[in-house]
Length: 280
Length: 125
Image (cartoon, rainbow over all chains, first blue to last red; front, side, top):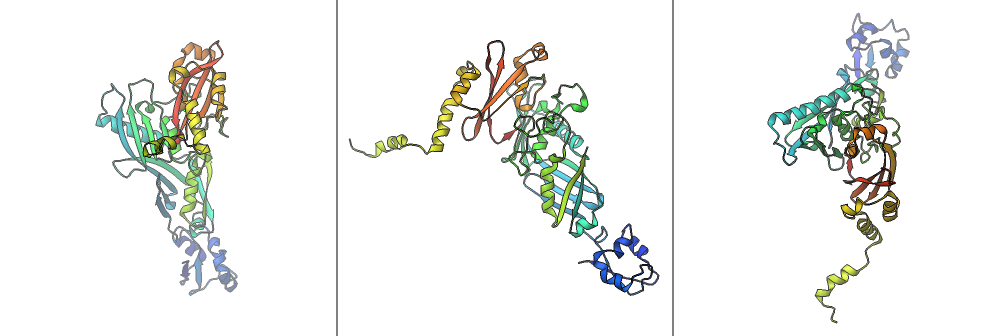
């Protein structure tokens, strides 16, 4: 239901706009909802006590928080903080390659922290997202540029993903890390804490984190998922030549890497369409 | 001869398989050869034996490779890799669930087997 404001003695459109944290009084006066009011008061400087003005959707009157939990991740939107928060719950199983010592509690914690830190550093704060549409939410937050943060949380049950981590000797040949989108399984190993110079440039900024790449699959860059695109290093990928891409052999995110997130966001709030404005 | 119960499993086993199942079975029989025999294969022999690959490509070997190809540098010295090594990668379906990728390298005797990986089609690396 739209908010209707009854004008009190001494109020101006400017004062009313400030009351509802609306930057410009014209946004109230010229709103489609106030067409009849404009006919009644063609001069916006002359409004009268008792006049009823409809306040267009704005942060003060529209719910800015929305969230949903899905099989592979949860998404929270907090429009007042201009933040979209994506979290995956990881349920770990730690195993050892034969001849290797058992995982200690500290090693398990350190491994999770390394994965969390690496994913946060390479995925969070990179996508800038805006929304548009006919919904009150879209109208109220049309000027907001959302930041997206990504997080993994260690859980003992009810995880979005079953994550098996193999401890291997340091510096040894590691088992192949992988993601099974359909089975919601991730396979990692203790050597995945190391960055890889897949492009061969020798520059730290170009090195790829195995955590960040595999997380990319789990967050929707899977040929088995709705986005329909996964690894980009194979010649069959349309993005094969974009070597610097995170899902190829590089370390850079691309707009398409948020395709699945955008699809899910667009299902969250009716008549609201989210778009990646930029990615850094 | 009496067609009694003991013969029934034999007759069922001899019954023709549906076409799709037959194809998969043939694939499995031809592609899933023993590792010792695989190691003797040239690329031409592999193509003769397994037919056209589902995917194939050629690339330069680097000291560090993507997860899927992470084993490959171990077959060469750092000097060989620095001098330039080309790899050919061919993938065939082993059965309905598993793919087999075979990598070939030319070390002066034509494109010969280097390494292989059997992997679940659901996995991404």
